[in-house]
Image 1 (cartoon, rainbow, N blue to C red):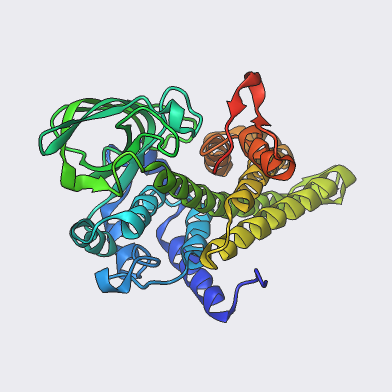
Image 2: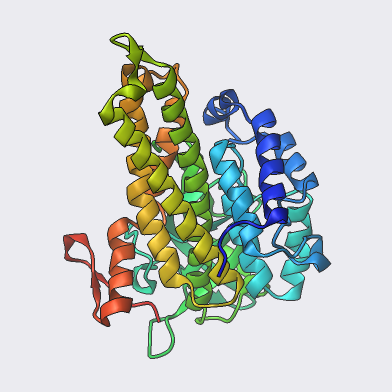
Length: 391
């Protein structure tokens, strides 16, 4: 196994960095925090023209059909630039449709994604934030040729900008070999949907979405009715892995800013980087970012090879949660008081990385999953909650 990037992957990485450094200054991230849409459509179209939106989607539908590692590389650079685009939510939903949707669904949605003509998102989390089938309370009831969805989803990315949303619903009670979960492709403008914007530390576009008797055609079902949980698990794995890549990119940039400041900031007549405590912080930041990147690349490689990768993804996310947060906090310490000023750009990376550590599973949840695989015992997480094993 070689998790180092090859020459072609390095070219993709360098081209993405050059483009995003030119098109996504920190001022753009600041502007989009207070923009209703939350992203610049022109930048989205440029990303489509570069082939990024179809990077890992089928060639027959306008994509490039490249391995997920290529998409992870782009996601890493998007994180580095804190580019305010709905890239993560759109790719997670599009990859799920590509893998498990019927041909009509693929043909109606994926070419538009590749061309930059649409934004997608997905809705899973509810008031119980654990990613377990028994926590899904949003119901979809069969009525004639439709399903009628009722319930509330939390922390849905970019719902206000999205045209379609993958919604995880309960369609039956759980039974042996049947979790009673189904996945639907829902038009975000459907009657009965309410979008309630949420205020988050990253000031990104997250919503509470209320479904009040929302009618969805049966043809919008992704996969088989009542058999959607395995599809959801794979969707969560992809989403978590791509989020890790995004965290790595943002954290490395934050670390570079801290190291550069340590070189140039003088105190007591010499650079603060000459003091041992600052030197150790800089060394730790580099170690942690490199470790997070290698774990993420390993998981990407295993997923591309079709090998079991769920545990490796949990290893990457648990490590990223702990160490990426430690890096951005260390960078704040190195910068001192100026790092806490809103006029200074450092907080843009700090707030986003901190937010991402709380998404798609805490360190405790992912460690419980790893422990279950190691010990063949039910994993435990804080507050005494059971974390049921993933089949």
